[in-house]
Length: 565
Image 1 (cartoon, rainbow, N blue to C red):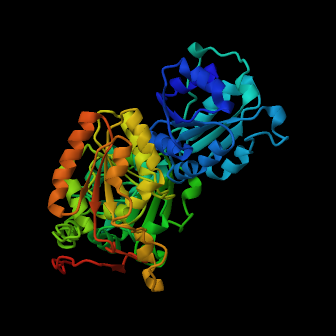
Image 2: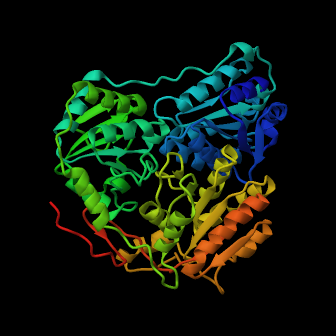
Image 3: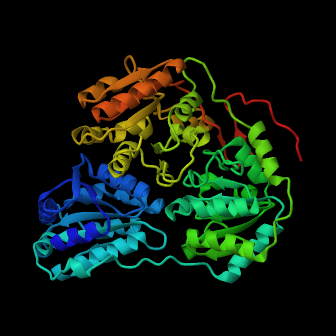
């Protein structure tokens, strides 16, 4: 286990989230003598999400540790979340001794088989001599290709064993950064140069690859507008004149959907064409050609067949596209397309300036945009509050907007925010959560309080399972989704006080800004999480639809649209 800890340290792990138990104590004995910081979480799922958040902002492999039996099964949701969003993470579990595995020993469960569908690799360490090599391979697999999670199961007798290991002559295994085939790069550039209304579409893979700079260089070189997916928020600055918004069914902008529908070519990089982005594929694909760039060959053609597929790491591929365009020396023909996109942005907004009481949810995000600076890291999960966040929040830098996009586990925000703050103590971190999501893993507030981890939590509270209530409208029902009871349901202010943390409830839009200022100051002063609970209109709906050309707007929109051709 000392070799395992040495491997973790050399792979860049300085923080581990976990819960000790009898079947994993040899590893903990080794960690105790290391420089790795350990945070004892209150639930193993919270530990996985904290490691996930740490990984998303650092780009390194996050680590979560637990004992045998239910500790491993509690990690499955976190493993699934990391696999779905391509997040490199290693979960380490203790296990009964090898001789007891077939005897139904206490807390002995075949966690490797359970974890296989939600990991890139799930393995049980069979011999002590394999320990450093299995962990080196675990880190390599987690980082290579399309990143993702790995589970390593450690029988107790193997942990107690000895192995030969010299850290002075050991190092991380190399990870390939595949470059694209030159002929496909040329074909992609030819398509871009020949298109009249092209778009670049940046998915989460651009952020994972640290390729935001190369994306911007290509866009500016060819004067091509850029859209982002939800996972790609931050890959391109949203105040840039070439930013073209977001297309989708839920997390979208009005002008982003219109720009997409008017495009004739889409070059997607590191995007998986998720169903909440594409909607009706016949609408999404009609009238435009697609180039799909991805590091994972089997992603290309999975949802629909593109006109051109390019396999490669996003960073060298984007750089190669730019270099090819420059080498050809052929500028893209003059076009009114970028100006058209800017016109759409100016004429197809959504309102966020409501002064109503109860508070209209878009007003919350207006206040977030205006109060917090561009270096703030926002963390959000799943629900109406996350959809409003995607529609209204502005992001300017990569790894500053974290969202569990595909799996969408409720409760993700608080532990993920802890992971972010542990990685970057100097950074302002804000978790945006719904009341129900907050309640899923609210016990992790105790971890942040114990270890003095300061961040701000903004709760958008409608006392509903809001997204499901809205989904029930076509069924003409409002069933099993109302969380209100008594005089206001859970008193989250007193709940935070029970954890030893400050909180404030806001019921008027004019009070939001002051509450955010108070929470930021108190969090920094006390080194504690601080909650701002914003009570919003209970049955407010978010703009959404079944296809990108049929989005239902539930609030009045500005009548600024023009017929510019």
